[in-house]
Length: 230
Image (cartoon, rainbow, N blue to C red):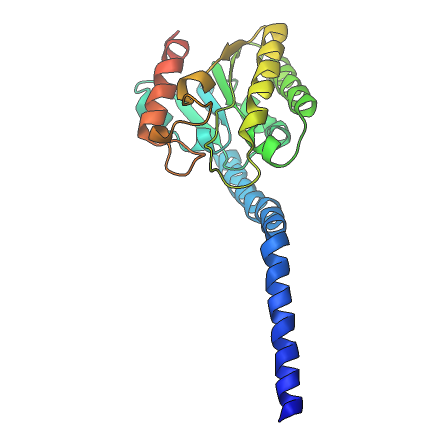
């Protein structure tokens, strides 16, 4: 009996140590699994659907991540021909890889909001800005009549899940704004409209510290409406 007790005790200790290890290190592994598997699968699903759709020449396209995907742009701007090309979890490199699907429509206007997931995945600011430049250059080569508008990266909440670091967003936006000026595209500062007094995403606009609720989208709509209707 004593031997069985010792074996049982040793087994339980192994389980406890394993659980402690996962508690300490598990977030990193879960995060990696989330980005490399769930996000990639979602990206493939959405992109395959986009490519199956017919060309819509001269549309207004909203391009980016989950902030774009979550907006009902056609209903926010009735009477406009609008294509929503947002994919949750997307990054600047992901947008670059699917630009062929964007330029085939030869959009009248293109609104771009991307970058926060780059930061969450550890992509440095110079690389993000370089990818932005490449996006703009390719659009201009393939669809020269397209008017390009670049949104600032939105703030995130104080208690957002691991990976999204609010303190990196302001310096990123400064570089994106500088790049926009150099590339002669319109930069739209939405960050300032959505942050609270501490610089975080205002809690009135979100229920998960990252994505927008109705009031947040109405703020965004009011900020870009003049460019959509221009």
